[in-house]
Image (tube, rainbow, N blue to C red; front, side, top):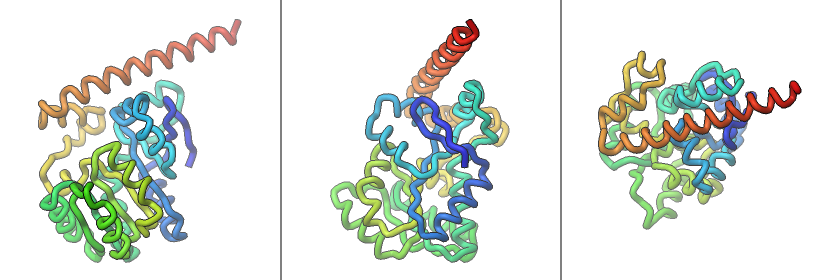
Length: 252
């Protein structure tokens, strides 16, 4: 996959199909792979959060999630075919795991949500092996949870914990987890379990998924999206201006 860099963040330019194929090949070769998706909020927060910045840069595959980042990359001259949404990739990888008999471990969210996610996942993907699951509130006993994952025999680990805790946990324990693939999935378990609804397709296509989330949880989401979206717009304007200025300088 072709890799670009945008505001200090590496990004792999790939379609959903290409991403699933590469991940499948790496798992088959038992080549440890850490995966992350980047949206506007994560890209903006990376500028000031050194732990998040280092963690994202250390990932083997970085997909672009969120139309805002797709449009921003295109505006700055990069050819991006499509977004690879984390929740959609999660479903595609569950399908892959079911087809190949690869055990999966789910980590994060509340006990009720992660348990329901496991149930829904096995219903949607017949043959899927759920090696185990655990809620995301275990910070007083991380080592026990890590041992549970290792002993489960899981090949794929999906982590639904907020950033940067998620990235710190993966980096701290990746050598002890015993899995071939680990992916941070944000609020995906809430979506799969039916606790949070996804935006309609037309809103997803037009980059308005953030507005749908704000409408669902205005108190929690309004400030987050308002601040990060505006900061990202300023970052793009500055980068566009610098690019134009440099081009004019080179011409003269």
